[in-house]
Length: 279
Image (cartoon, rainbow, N blue to C red; front, side, top):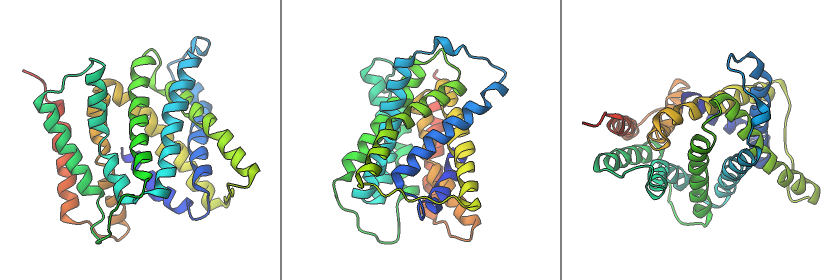
């Protein structure tokens, strides 16, 4: 989550000179390519000939690519505060998916842990500047993005369980980029999408950090953590990401409010409560 959080200020700077949809394509594709290049250095070899291509293309394309696409569109038609609040519902969505599939039991302790994590995530995500929040239509896309991301995480753990986290991250990232590529090319050729981009040394450095650390390595760690903890518990830690971003801003001279610190503590309490061993 710390690595993932470093990507938010990086993306914020890149969006000044890059088209959002093109940047999403570059995020997924470049991260997948960089991880693939470093794959030979991994001690654990993987037999790529046995790769379940249909499952990979479906999970990575529909789940990861679809989630990224919906998130970009939602940011155009929804309030950013609302999107941040909806993002805190990932543990709840995961728990509901697990209960419907018969894989998880919605115990009172788990529900309390999810409530703490969601409340904490909302406190750390909310904008306390007095900005008004209203329904603008993109909220549906934001919620769909949450559902697709949760499904991607659960399907990657369950259906691709024989693959180590590293090659799993490589192929699903590339599959997600493969889905977005025709949209970007089609939009550019039709004139509907203006491909704004900048390739100065400053921008290339930001892209390198985003591909290697904030997307590439964080995806590997996420898939590994979700396999050991379960997606529901692992996603509770995601709700602390806004607080980490605030800490980075604090180092740059910004201020952190007491409510946001309380939110981070609630997220920690929820994650710890969910991970306590059963009697």
